[in-house]
Image (cartoon, rainbow, N blue to C red; front, side, top):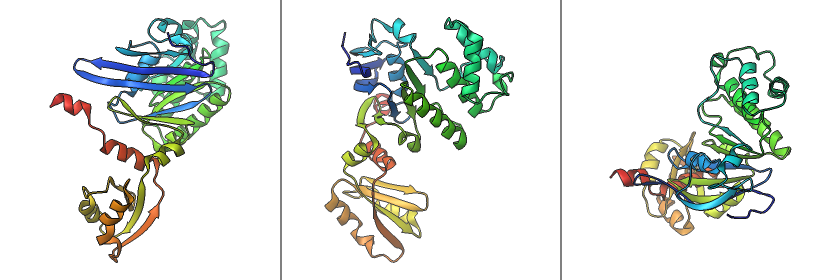
Length: 315
């Protein structure tokens, strides 16, 4: 069994999981410190959910080892489950019970001394007052999200695992949710959250980017962006679609992507980038401006260089 430092909540090395002929998670090494909000990013099918399930004891890894909350993820999963709050992608509470009834039920399942008091506290904390008697099935996505979070934190876990918790939720509900997550983190709760949203990733203390089962980048956001080494340009003007078509696949350009009313163009070899865009730099239809790469630029570039193991297996 691996021994983790006291301030390390998740410490895994070489984590691997295979389903049939497909390796969904490959040789993943990860550390998350206590009180951190750790963002877990990657495309659909990249292995994020499988990793989360291995960390909390719902799946047994085929390779690798590690600890979660100081317990061995292979042999002590029953102890991990008692101290983890896991919010799945799908709303998993009872649709025909009210908010209060759902929370009280969760309190009883976890053997809380006073489930009613615990439910009232969660209702007050998450702004669910006045709705406590509303059926869960009648709630909007944002209110369901609050209820699910309330159920996760009811037994006062040491680690919160959130699997794409804000998918399909409006911007205000997402902002309120993240404010609550930061409040919980400030109180010492460790949070691992998977997300597709770049603005959410930037609110994390550290991030890890996983694509098709492999960890491609990790660390604080500014370090991940800097380590990518991208030189980027923002191009505005008319008929950017035609410009993008002309630039795509040119040697030296690893990034050609529309961003709203502009186009992001870039690559790692600065001389090659300059040579590739030179024919269009003086074109009066376009305005070129040197720009700092964004987190989204980095992820688009990472994805363009990573093979899709799902397609490889299918072919």
